Length: 476
Ligand code: NAD
Image 1 (cartoon, rainbow, N blue to C red):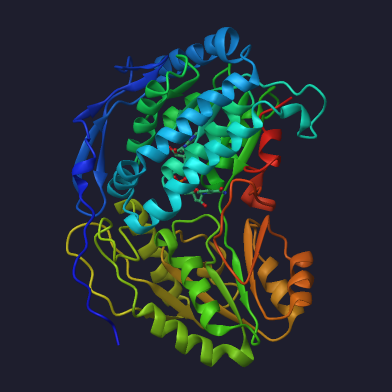
Image 2: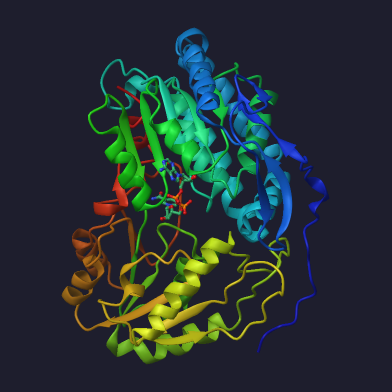
């Protein structure tokens, strides 16, 4: 039985969204010299939230010049212990403003407030605290006696975790003594612009952090700029490939965090109720807009019927709707383009012969929504088993033996994450040894921690973010 809940909306009055935003260059908000403004919308209501400046090549050039000057004059020469003070200050301001930032993130991205408040924002602050701690200890990181910063970092991030991806990029870069020019995704620029205000509030020296807004062309101008020393990109594999080609042969160091198609493997001895929670968290967290989402469920045949019945029952209880309502489990799809992609791939799943089941839940009339969906009878050749859908859609496959599970799990061009559910510790280790994925969760899923490295194999990219390993990407 589903309980009735009264609506419990978080108030949006705590955020103050301006009608228009400029670019953040050299410590201040400035007009764009050569871009045309674009709009960011609330995906839950389709209402325009603000007009955002687009950075053209001249603006990107100004931002890189500001970052270069700050690297040479203030940030580069500053002792690590001093840099740490700024990072701690930023971390504390993020904590102080976390409610406001969580609401802003939910409005611009569509993710439920429960997640932006309890997952994104605590992790954002934790990232800055963690890397602040490293800033004066870099010579003990195991990367040589006198590790040096690289210089100016060009950073491009996606829309699924706007502020968290910013933290993953900016915190280690600054801790290591680099300066940055960051481009947020075009559909979710607002929390990065709020972060620019936080840099001002923290009295960060001008030019250490620069935020240039815009779409792919702005990102391309940034990563191809001659005066950047490091490129850090998180986004789709196609764009990652283009970036790898464009920087090949240059002196730029590169890290790429790309897509995924993770297997979540459930053995018949697993605690099934817990596994069901993990499966739901694995694919429906953040509307499934998660690079490491457990989008391929591999179930041992002998436990299949019981698990599927429990999973469908649980999915029927998920609440889809207003991202600001504290009862909401699944918020809005971030953009109409992404909704279209999810619909198209789901239709292809049906036409290729998989059986579609959708949770019976009402969807709001306005905005971009997609009900939690699963496909059974999926074969490895189906596109829904091979391509990243990046939405609340789960493809279910079966296996009989552990060896078959490994073979199926690894049968993908990606290698970002995987999950294993079993009561046997030895089997977890046996599987973890054989699964070709950067992160493997055992009897849990989608757990993140700033001390733990994250990154992929194969077409999921290269380099690691987080933990001591994350320093390596920003030091020579
Ligand atoms: P995307 O590749 O379309 O865009 C990512 C960013 O790159 C955006 O800011 C975009 O404006 C910019 N961009 C687009 N074209 C560019 C170009 N030619 N040069 C430089 N920048 C360019 O990806 P998306 O749709 O925003 O994000 C979803 C993808 O991100 C998924 O594939 C997901 O798996 C991946 N992702 C990966 C991780 C990870 O850590 N591995 C984390 C989050 C998301």
